[in-house]
Amino acid sequence: MDEQTLRIFLSLAETQNTRDTAAELRVNQSNVSRALARLEDEVGMALFARHGKRLELNANGLAFRADAAGILDAVESARRHAELIADEGRLLRVGFLHSVARWMVPDVIQRFRALRPDVRVSLRQGFARDLYGWLTLDTIDVALSTAPLATSATSDDIGWQPLAEEPLCIAVPAGHPLAAASGPVDVRVLAGRDFIGFSRIAELRTAVTGILDEADVAVNVTFESSEIDTMRSLVAGGLGVSILPRTPGRDDPGVVYLPLEPQRVRAIGIAWSTTAQGARYAKELVAALRER
Image (cartoon, rainbow, N blue to C red; front, side, top):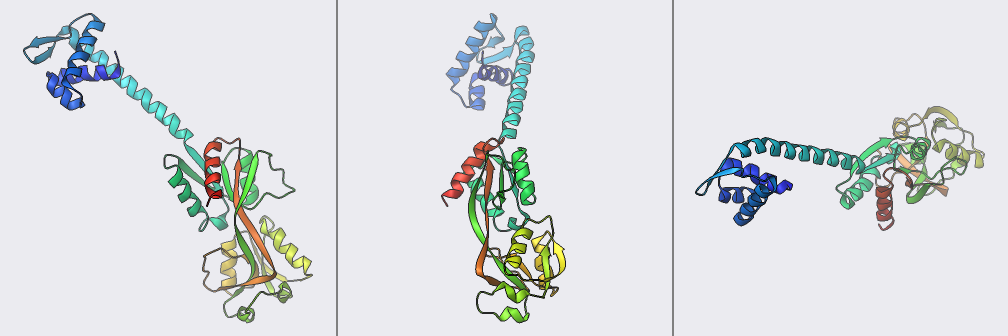
């Protein structure tokens, strides 16, 4: 006997009519009659008393009904359990830099949802070193981040694909004397100015310090932060100037961005682990982003 046969039997116990059961289960009436005949043949006894077209459970049928209902309940419970396990496996874990939360994360997630609407997505924010650590530990499957540093102990199982570039610019308050510059600016114009820098835990600190040191420029560091949004706010408030990435398509009221001469950029891309729990979905996402 199979699940469908048991459902037909339980329906007949309620409707007492093959026509009504056929309508309820959306099957042919002849299929209902054949299923009942097979069932009674398998159990070796009649389960219904026949009164013309009306079927009424006999003593055997009453006893069998309880067992049939229990079997179907067990089948449904097993199905729900299997679906739960499968659902836990349909998950892409995405880590990302705070600075790309507004412009890159929504686009990437929308692309993945269009590609795999059946897969859930979890999000986790961190610094680049955190993201690569999580990839190595199989805590996330992909990361929207800068490229791994050549000196970092990144696993050979982690790949990286560039997606976009953010130009590094001199950021000054609106109304600042430098804000009127009409073209790229030499970093030496920052010499001696109040400067909002990156704190030691921020990956961009190395890049910005390198730009200043290369030009032999000394600035007066008045504030330090690891959060780019905080630094933008401090610049807009007139508390100093800075060197910050300019986010594509983003408008920051009160801040004027001046391109550096020579140009400097920060590459943002997607890193993924080839051995992670969600490696299959990570590879699908990376392939889709390469085609855009």
